[in-house]
Image 1 (cartoon, helix red, strand yellow):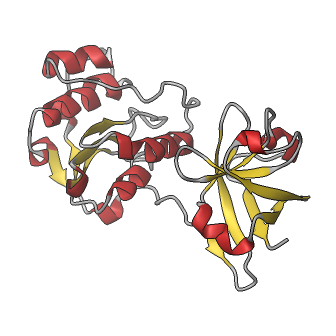
Image 2: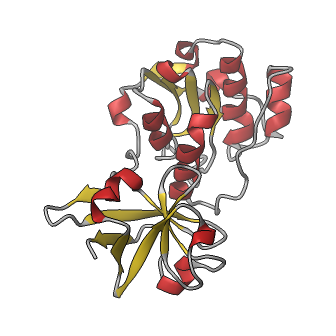
Length: 247
């Protein structure tokens, strides 16, 4: 139905679905999904909906990042902010006036169809953000940028687990440059588990049951096994802390 509303408001404007598989109510997972995908979605309007607070006093917003030619539309619950920061400096933000922008619906719990979709379509056609609501200070938007890894004086790199894909690869908030001082083999700590991990260019370079750090398709390091789940082997979950040390 969201597609149908966009087609009615902006005929001929192409729509790209990123995913419909974000776990229900998981704003963090949705925010990271947008953060990873955003560089491939601009210039354009990015509509995101993971909205357990729909129908409440949570704000509906549109956020502009002019240098990327992007406007992000959705709930102000932390879903949009990581992607916006990844694209550049936020240049404008508005709180959507539902009375002014909303399409008639049968209730107030489908903002994706009744509010975010029509606003996104009109912005795609060139409508000015100022016409959709009152300006907001971007500093007051909910959420935080994706954290950067921290390097300690000992050389240790403290990372956060961002995501675990369906193969069990564990994406970290660190790239190859963050660990190049550690060498080709590092000591990896995950909770009470420690092991050695080898930096590898591809999964197939790893021996069976050998833990590796592979640069994934987003340019981030992923704790990986060749043909098996590193997350299951090491007992890792999203949000866990991972420590990478000199061997």
